[in-house]
Each structure stands twice: as structure tokens, then as C-alpha cells.
Amino acid sequence: MKKFRSISSLTSTALLTGMLAASSAFAGWSVSGTKVLDPNGNNFIFRGINHAHTWYTSSTSKAMSDIAATGANSVRVVLSNGTQWTRNSGSEVANIISLCKANKLVCVLEVHDSTGYGEQATATNISKAAEYWVSSDIKNAIIGQEDYVIVNIANEPYGNSTNASTYTSETSAAVKALRNAGLTHLIMVDAPAWGQDWQGIMRDNAQTIFAADSLSNTMFSVHMYEVYNTATAVQNYLTSFQAKGHALIVGEFGTENNGNNVDEASILQYTQQMGIGYMGWSWSGNGGCCAALDIAINFDPANLSTWGSFLINSANGIKATSKLATNFGGNSSSSSVKSSSSSLRSSSSSVAVSSSSIVRSSSSSFSSSSSVPSSSSDSSSSLASGEQCNWYGTLYPVCKNNTSGWGYENNKSCIARSTCVTQPAPYGIVGGTTSSSVASSSLRSSSSSSSIVVNSSSSSKSSVANSSSSSSIASTGLNCVYVITNSWGGGYQGAIRVTNKGTSTINGWTATWQYSGANRLSSSWNANITGTNPYTATNVSWNGNLSAGQTVEFGIQGNTNGGAAETPAVSCK
Image 1: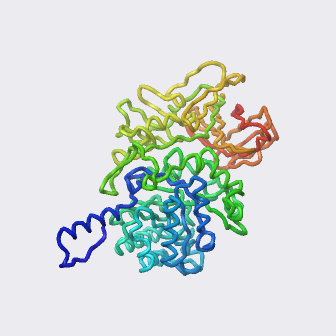
Image 2: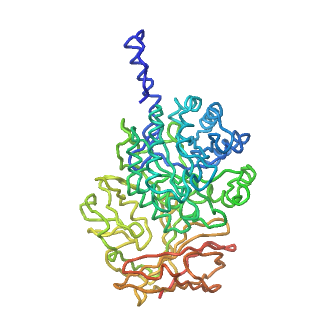
Image 3: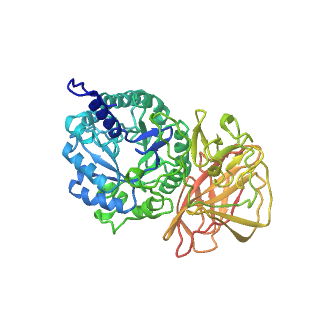
């Protein structure tokens, strides 16, 4: 709360009026468990773009309107405290906020000078970034703008060598510094290890940092680059963090980093499925090593890069999934949560289901999840029927009260049944008296035709018969599933998931498939692939041993060569 000095000449009525006005002005953004709430108490999911203001100050005004025109609902703005680049003044910050408001963009402001502290010699400690926010001109610019501004204390504030204790204590101290200065904004903190948190330091210490905030109003940001080059890596981190019960955003990501692949398709897919925000890096101006990360080439919105077009126009991209904050006139939904306490946990927000997942199983209509160990979950908040959700190999309780998306009940993350049943085989609902069509507690056979299940953006579902004969689980117990995670123009990206449905460990696997049309592979990861159609994939050194019930996957990317993305049958042995 904002502190007021007592003025004896004020009447009690005037004082009360002033306090009520201040309370309204400083309501601002808040968090509720894993959800971010706008100033009206409605669930908000960031669909935004980063803009490097401090290096391209003259481009900011047009960039803001161009970013808004993509359908983005938020922008993350690079600022400098003067350590590495020219300091951005309070008047500059005030103008940026005005531009954000004029373009109906939620304004996330960050200090970039701390990037890679401990490894980058010129970087400044997070404490210096905190000093920037509480300096008089910056403080005056942002106080009163709590409904529009989120303070991202410092960008990627540590390199790879910082230990958990240092990160946690210094980040907590920075949060306290802002609160002690009277700032009541929603605070965002970045992960260490250049933002990528590959050691899980931010994830595992999020509660300690959150507890350091006297207003319980802090959210967390991970930057997904080359560490997140597979669907498994993306899904594992997002799921494990969300299970901690705190709000997360993918504050930066792109199509590559220094020539290293990033699985941007899976980032879009899983954030959409899980109701997590994302902000792509960056609008324009990346040079040298990072030119491929420009969303708009030379700041021209009519000349989007391949990365920019994918971020904005793909099935899980900004244009298809972004919704304005309700304080900018966006539509509210039944997922709104109104509370005077920002620490209240909610489990009623709605999460849209991925619109780009196309699944085909080599075992046709056979599916099973009975081999997934149940020891990893707690069924205390499951439905009375005993149902649980197998979310890509991890069991979670099925929510009692939440009807869509992820929730938080009985101090644990849970998944609504309606969201769980959309997962591809062999995942989905397990246990209980009923089961979803994609994951059953027992094997079931049907007709000889395989099926293709499509989750469309309009929530319609279609099944298309294929003339190929059905195939059973291989004698080795292996089952392969071919998944298209995204397709665009002349290309597609997907994965092949290999599951051991047997009862004993398998040492080594091989997957084979052939496209009937013009589709051809251009790249792959996490497998050794030979052939030019048909293709044969074998395990690499670290993913060849599969215990009973275990699933691994390898990624593929290719060209459609004038056709549509295909979903060929895959045989496993």
C-alpha cells in the first residue's frame, strides 16, 4: 500500500476520499497462484513482443503501433540504467508508458544492463537495476501507472556460474528494495543462466523469492533459447514450474540462438495448452549473430521474417491467441477472479487448447496408459472416480472445481478433465470408471483403419479414415506416434514419440516411416536418421534405454514441397 503523510488540516472526509482514490489507482496487476490477473481481476495471458528501445529510441513510437497491429496484447521494452548504455530517463519512460496505453499494450519494462552478470564483465548487479527503479525520476514516471506497467527488475541478471544461494538472496533483496520504496506494481523476475534456468534454480527457489515480496505480487520469467530445442525440454520445464504454484511467462524466445536450434513450435504449443504467456524476441534491430531473431526486417511490418511470420501467424501464434486486457476494452470471461489479496490462489481460469496438434499412432486405435507409474502423483484433489491426468508422462490430479485448463487445488496443481482429454495418445485421462479416447487403462481395438485427430482452433474435431491397415504394438512392446506440432507455408515441424508399452526395459529402438507425397525432412534432433524416404531413425546414446511405460521423442522438421503436412504410419522395433 502507498504510505500517506498525515496533514492535520485535512478533514477526515477528505482524507478518506483521498485514500479511496489511492486504493483504486494502485490496484494494478496481480497474481493468483499460476495465473496473472489484470486490474479488473480477469485472467490474462501475455501474447507479446520485445522491443529494444534503448538502442533504437527513434523507432519506438512506430514500433509500438506496428507491434499492436500484429494483434499483440503486450510489449516488453528494453531500458538502460546507464551502466552499459545511455540511461533512459524518467521522461522517456513516461512517454513509453503513454505509447503503450495509446496502443492498448500491457507495458513490461526491464533493465537490460544486468544481462549475464558474473560472466559478462560490463554487466551490473541486480541491485543496481533495483536502484534504477527507485530513483526519483523513474519512480515518479511509474507510480500511478500500476494498471498499465509491470516492472521486470533486470534482464537475465546472472550468467551460468551463479549459484542458487546468490541468485535467490540477491533477487529477494531486489524485490524488497522496490517494495520498501513504495512501489506496488506487479514485479517480474528473470531466471539466471542467461535467463534459461537450465539448472532449475529459479524454479526451485521461486517460493522463497515470492515470500520476500510483502505484497505477494511477483511473477517469474524464463527465456527459452537453445536449452529448449526439443518438445520434451519445453514441456518438462513449463510443467514442473507450474506445479510449483507460481505464475510464469516465457519472457523471451526465438527461432535460434547463435545458430543453435530452438523448438519455437513447441513453445507456442505448450504455452497455449497450459495458459502461459509468451513474448517473442524481438521486433527488429538484431545484428551480427542474431539477425535471424528479427521479427520484422528493418523495422518494416510488411516484411516479416520467417520467424516473425511464424510467431504472429501460426496456429498458436499471436494473431490467433491474443486477447486484450479488459482494462483496455478486451472481453472478460468466466475465468475472472476478483480478490483484495494478490496471494489468493485461483483455479477457475480458462486455457485454450492447442490448435495445431495432429496425431497418428502406428498402433492405430490401440492405446494404453496403465504402465505409467502412479507413485509420482497425489490423488487428494482428483475426482471421486479416481481419475488422474497423464500429462506427457507425468501424473497430475484431475481438478474438482476447474472446468478448463490448469488449476491449483489442495496446494497442488491439477488439470481440468476437458483439457486432459485433448492430449495425444498415449496420454490423457487414466484410472477411474471412465477414460478418454486417447488414453485408456486397457488396450482396445477397433476397425482396421487408423485415425487422424485434429484439434482445430474452433474446437471442432474431425476424424479422417486412412486406407492403410492397422498395426499392432511391435513384439518388442514398442509403440510409435507421429505428431505434427506446427505447419506453415511450405514447411512443418513435428516429433515421433517412442513408448515402451512392454513390461521390461528395452535397450535401443528403431523407427521407420515413409511419406506417400512430397514431404521430405530437412533437419532432425535427438535421433540418428538415415535414408531419403523411407527414413530410419535410431536412438542416440542417452535415449536408447526405455523402462516400462517410458516415452522419449525426437524432433523432425521438413518441407511440404507444395503439398500438405503428412502423417505417415511409423513402425517401431
